[in-house]
Image (tube, rainbow, N blue to C red; front, side):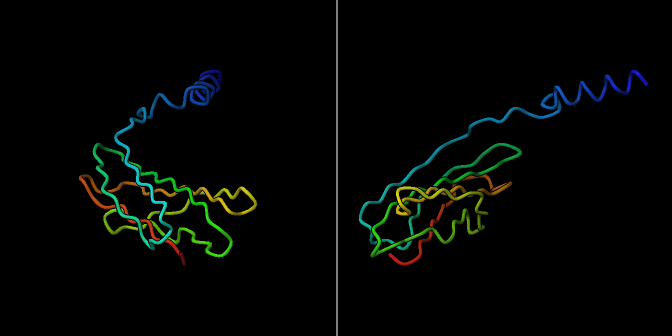
Length: 116
């Protein structure tokens, strides 16, 4: 019985021993201040094994034109929205989107907005 308890404690204290350490691969960014686009597109390169693509967005808008992110794709595959944070009286929005196991290589990230 003593062995079992020690094993469980060891696994609880050191869960990362059976996991690979995450490695940063690459970053890409794009900024638009024209407020006239319904989509932003940029290329991003993904490599390695056990991949996770995370895309963060930040939008700031005026009340007369509240454009929001309606979707993001990578290589035509939709990312899942993970979080939304609204600030500045509702006129600034930060969002996080992710895709587990994205295709390797260089592909387009397309961010689509609602009305602009």
